[in-house]
Length: 99
Image: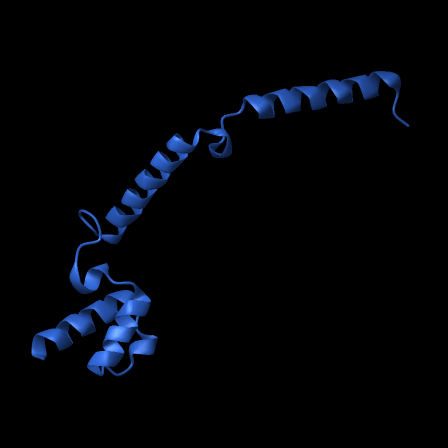
């Protein structure tokens, strides 16, 4: 069993932890405008990492994988279900050029 002095120390530590967590500026505690701005910056960084220079572009590169698969089916491209997005973009673009 804990002594009175130990219980007081534990209460004091809990209060300190609660105070610190209230003061902490985590993303969840930030204003919504700041959160959305951070989200936009993160999306831009992810796009840059993928190789996009500005926005998502147009044409096959701007389509989602599901849209690309539908387009590939319409164009009669074989093996489309096993292709990734980059392969689908290339295949659709190539098939459009030859058609």
